[in-house]
Amino acid sequence: MAEKSGMQLWGGRFAQSTDPRMWALNASIMTDRRLAFHDIRGSQAWVRALQRAGVLTAEEAETLQSGLEAVAAEFAEGQFVFAPTDEDIHTAVERRLRELVGDVAGKLHTGRSRNDQVATDFRLWMLDAIAALDAAIADLQAALLTRAEADFGALLPGYTHLHQAQPILLSHWWLAHFWPLARDRERLAQARERTAVLPLGAAALAGTAYPIDRQALAADLGFRTVTPNSIDAVSDRDFAAEFLFAAALLGVHLSRLAEGVILFSSAEFGFLTLSDAFSTGSSLMPQKKNPDAFELARGKSGALIGALTGLLATLKGLPSAYDKDLQEDKAPVFRAFDDLMALLPVLADALRTLGIHRERMADAVSAATLATDLADHLVKQGVPFREAHHIVGRLVQQAEAQGVGLDALPLEIYQAEHPAFTPDALASLLSPQASLAQRAVEGGTAPEAVQAQIAKAKEALRMRNVKNCE
Ligand code: ARG
Image (cartoon, rainbow, N blue to C red; front, side, top):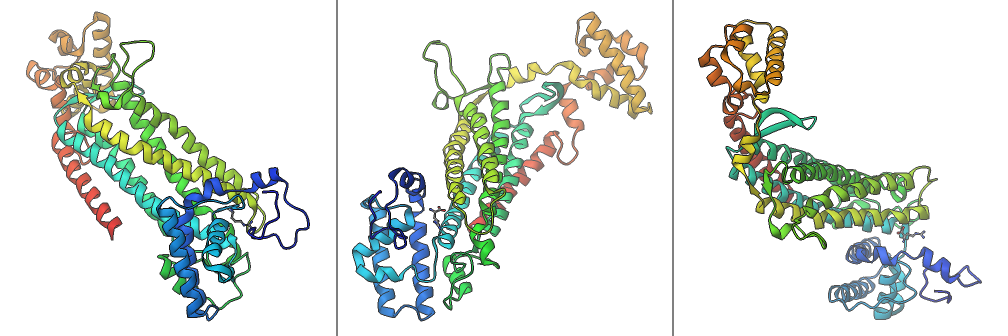
């Protein structure tokens, strides 16, 4: 707004009005309006703190509280009308408060700056965001766990370098995507601890000049403790960067899961079929059913990484305390949060509703994936592993030369390489089930090890959900 207005929070020392383009550039209301409830909660706690400090009378405090309540109600009902002078959410709330309760509204900002106010609001928002994101990740974990249980027994080739390596259980593969999410939730819980530190009371940068009990204020707002340095308090956005790192790494995990599902649902693999509800079509090719949910997971992870690097670049090289650069902190965080909250429930239900093709997966397991088991068999007969590796390597070479699988190579060739390759031994060795059964180590793909892992995953999900509800 070009007009010099009484509603502007900082007009006093200015003789000229603000250029409208400067106003538009500077205003952050379109972004920070979503902090409305957190701003009001922060202000209500500040009123109580001012009253405890003897700065506000009980009557003034009461007026401000009911006024702030009324402003919150307007937001809740979608009735709040923004004014052209509303530079940011802090200005908007205070402007409306003044309209409702009169000049006493001017006492609300006593001993406080928008610098400590915005840092407080953003942290309050983030505490809620972390809780919501955690619940959405937990639901995706639950979907993976359900798949692991429902698909138990299905086996497929395990890949390294995207080439067939060894047979695995599909349940083991699903759970390989469960545990990274468990770590994401741990990371968010740790970031939460550092977010729950109250900056309010730091004022502009040097600390408020009023006798505010900051610890009481922190407890009132649900923070663990208070920031130990007022300059750091108004400039610290580590909590936002940590949140974005957790979001970016979560995005990387989702992207890798997505890539696997996309590949496995292609005609060439044919292991999975996505449900219609979570696929989309092509405007040109009538036959197409595209895995867009998973492609968007892969795609959005790029923007999540960008949000993190963007914020880090904004923070780097900032001089002391608050600088307006910091106003650029919220948009990337909001976008990251919104993207993930749109993505996670879709991925969870897309996983719940996809179909698997057990036979096709089992048929895809080439006998070559059993080569390690042949070598291990020789090792059990006392052959050093390195030698066994060479022997089986020669068998693979001969099978390739004859254009057959290891399971179709004549017995004489096996026997010529090593007498321990008896018909009985080969019969039991050359099956994917036998290969799985060998890997009963904790964390391995043998059926009983995967059963134990499922139990562990259930426990991890239950524990963390309980912890986060405390
Ligand atoms: N809109 C600002 C932000 O988001 C609020 C803090 C403004 N502080 C200031 N000194 N102008 O960062």
